[in-house]
Amino acid sequence: MASRLLLVRHGETDSNAAGRLAGATDNDLSDIGRSQVQRLPAILRSYNIERCFSSPLKRAVQTAEVAGLKVELDADLREIDFGLWENLTFQEVSDADSKAAEAWLRFDPDFTFPNGERIGDFVDRAKRVANRLAELPDKTVLVVAHGGVITAMLNHLLRLPTQGCWCFDIRHAVVTVVNMYDDAGVLTGLNLGMEGQ
Image (cartoon, rainbow, N blue to C red; front, side, top):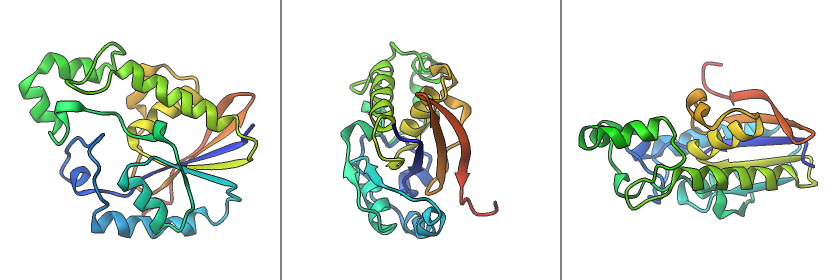
């Protein structure tokens, strides 16, 4: 069993900066995002990373490339698919359909984004990949993924309720560390390497 998971959110994209939903949308890193990622090697230097995995979406793959990481792609690490809400702001979504926006904020497992992914299916996917990575024989495993995936993985690994999804503010291109003990995780670092820390 892995004893440590390092979780890295990709660098910033233009959609992130504009506050637009970009789950399945395959955005590139922005210039700011590439700059953020360049500090990752220094942050990761003290960890003996044995294996690296990444979402197949470009912003995650580019994060790994800029950081000099050799990764294995895992489709379960892709971000939630917002369907017709892709590239909208939360305010635009709320103005168009406040009840649906409220269901999303409650993280109702039965809620499905219009033409997109069901929240319950997304949570199951995040749990599945978290379990699979935690069960690897490699001691330290690094993951490059997305804010939603990392939060859902954290809730599962730390044995928190799914509705606690909004408890974590996962920043771009920094490291969150979970130490594993008997299939349960302990959060030992959140957003490590963030400027100003």
